[in-house]
Length: 205
Image 1 (cartoon, helix red, strand yellow):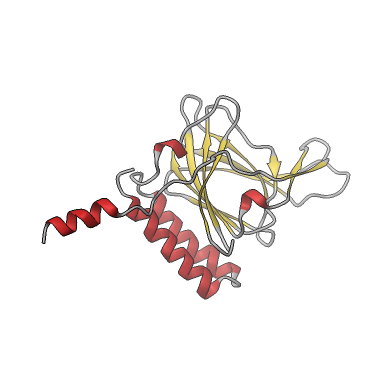
Image 2 (cartoon, rainbow, N blue to C red):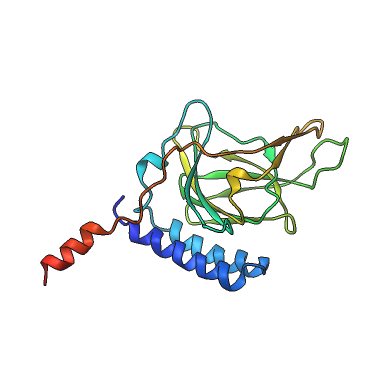
């Protein structure tokens, strides 16, 4: 992690946005999307232990959770060939690709007793930001677009997403299964230890 200040600044600006416009979803998605695009346009701040893939499944690492749970920031790591099931979020979300590439398949809202209906698919590249919410489209499947290496994306959600009750959908039948994702990390990254830079500034006096 060469530049933790980049993430600290992102959290500070997103916190200010949540305070000023947290009830205005369009504003949060638009302004927050620009903030996230700025963050993922630089690959010099994410600690490598929160970008590690697993052969078992994609990984979801919590990087920060607002003390009032107005938003959370998560890194997702996809190994080659890994994919999510079709799922929803129930809250607004922003997805910015940091490394590699992802495929997003979009689905129409669930209709009881009917198969899931795919309505689009697009590729998301480094620096790109996707938006989701129940009001603009909330159901999708995400997959690593690369067959030979991991992809990493940074997600911001309008809640403590690991503790939100959500839904997985069977694409063929539309059957619904509730799920709570949780997180794969047991420790949080330390972006806030500025002791080394403070010591250095004292030495220069």
